[in-house]
Image (cartoon, rainbow, N blue to C red; front, side, top):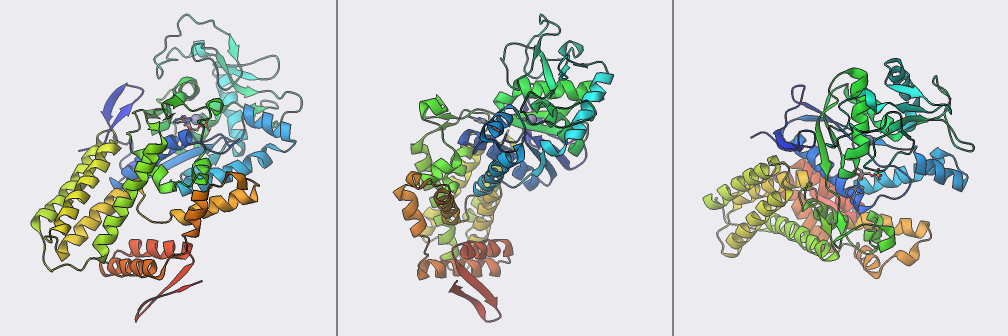
Length: 494
Ligand code: AMP
Ligand code: ZN
């Protein structure tokens, strides 16, 4: 079965097929780097990561581009307030974003930065003016004339037929119910950062950035464009208007939007005190793997209600999977194979695949792997598991983990980095006892290390060198050097 995905443009679940052979070209709207990323942002980024991983697992090659919005109204305002350049202001948050993404298991997309494409953005505006769909205002800003794009509203399904031609708006985010000519390019106000370009001094509007960079990297028409549901209007609507007016071709084939996350049943907001960055949660002592697991536990189009109970439950789930894998690799079993277990492993892989093909039903995929673990553990306990059953069960776990990426036990080294960061930033007060305890336990006992080395040996015997390397890297992170020699595997503490 091919992958079926919901397409916001058609409001239907459709078969996903790339426009060009087996290559998927997808673009995700990235973060605006003016602060640390919060768990809502990561809900969306993890959903896109999951899609990317599943496409790769399905045999596609994936060109996944994401922008870093490193210039916008808030950035200009904050950098002016702090008396630093836009670049000085954003580089800290961009670095933090990339570290956080890696921490939560997001494979890095191909990154493009708005400030590195200013000339191309000015060209784009000039071309829109030439086509008669954009105009220059008295102050040197440029606007897109939405009356020239009759399909305006087709993504968000809004009817703008009664709107006022020429009414303008120059902020990036605006009232969702009003359609106005939007700013493509903003002339500088006194004290604001700007670039000198062929269309005059100024800076690009946010919507323009994504149109220019996505088409530059992926072509005029590409397969999929992603973001959180708040981007449907105006951001994506405006991207479509700009891009399709210029090229006369459909812009993105699929539109993929993740539903907004709630925290304890409410919209996340600083004033409600329920606003959490990824780092806030780690400072409280939660593991990155639990957070990733929780964020994937509800399919991307369903409302995910983030709760601390849910986070604890996610930690238990991850632990159960890890213990099961350890149990399999450490077991000494009788030779032979149990046909029931052999088919259980194969069916579980099929079930996971079918769930993900169904508009990325992550909850069902997780349920399938847990059912496998439950039945295999029962067979273990009853003595009916055989030596040859280990490989297919491990293979099913690996298939699961290619997508969910929570099995490698590398949480503590990541948590230590957050602890060190908090100390460096003078935020010691926010470090919980739980985090301190978790980091202290990083000192692996000799028994733990021996168990890992045995796991490495089993992996190498099964020629699973990827797994063996992952364990070796995990041990290296915990300060254990592993040497592989002809005589066997040796280890020592650094
Ligand atoms: P921003 O940095 O605000 O531009 O947001 C980056 C990404 O996070 C965008 O795709 C947003 O749609 C998404 N996003 C922001 N808040 C949430 C939330 N509460 N739940 C899910 N996605 C969100
Ligand atoms: Zn965008």
